[in-house]
Amino acid sequence: MKLGFSLQSLAFFGGAGKDSSSEWIAHYESIELFLDVLKASGITSIELRYLPRSANPRVYREIIELIWGMGLVLTVQGEVADTARGSCFAEIYPSMSFIVNHFHKYQSTLLMTLPLVDAWAAKVSNAEWHEQTVRLLRHWTEIVTAEGLPITFALENSKLSSDGSIPGCPLERMLRIVEDIESPSVGICWDLGAYYAEQLRISGHAHPIERYGGGLPSPSFMKRVSHTHLHGVASNGIHNPLIEKESLPLETYTDVLRTSGYEGIYNLEFTMDKCSGMFEPCDLIFGSIRRVKQAHIRPAKSYRGM
Image 1 (tube, rainbow, N blue to C red):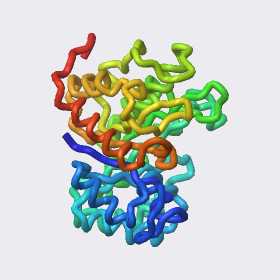
Image 2: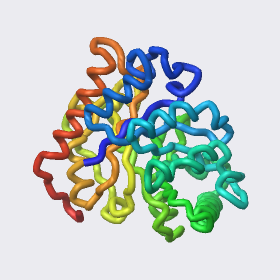
Image 3: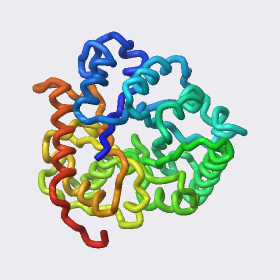
């Protein structure tokens, strides 16, 4: 089992320095100490959440070097923009230049997750949005292939919202995009927490429910999953810890992943300022890690169609 942890961009700049304590690193004395404790708990990869195309690579460089120096794998949450074109990947995604130039020294491949918004958020028709996205990501894969860069992309479902404040992309539309691109370099990042929040919305539950009665993604969707984001749902939204059973039907979801043959990273994605209150942030983080481990070692149940 491969475990990952998303480190929010505020841990890289604006909220914490390399040697300063902050809620973004669970109030540890330094990012290095926090990463060391995560590694000791079984975390093997760190996701940079998130890296905008306009960011200055120098801001991230020291901490990324620290991640690699500790023997941890780096993954990156990026963004999709129709203007992101160029003759090389450094032009397509300028803030990735340092990572692209150096990651081969520390890891064999590099995975980027790309959250997708729906067509209406892009102010185009469904058909136009589909064609634009397919065309753009085909361009990206052609560029990384031409440059010999072992970079893979995972399109991520975001939380849908009835008021349109979080314009997510339905799973079926994501799957059609991936199938039409027809590249082994493009898969799906299944955000379990966002998916669960949508299931709750569909079922009419305003808050998490203990007994899960929602549907599950199709086998075709599951076969394309190359990365995951794990977080809980609570009354304050998503990206919460997983220690409460009702926060996420984690055991059901991990069963489906295992049955489908998933061998990628189980990546925990928390908004750290939600890790407060009655418990210390570190207790919530490491309690969540324990639950994920326990879910993975329990005998898996099979589900119809899997």
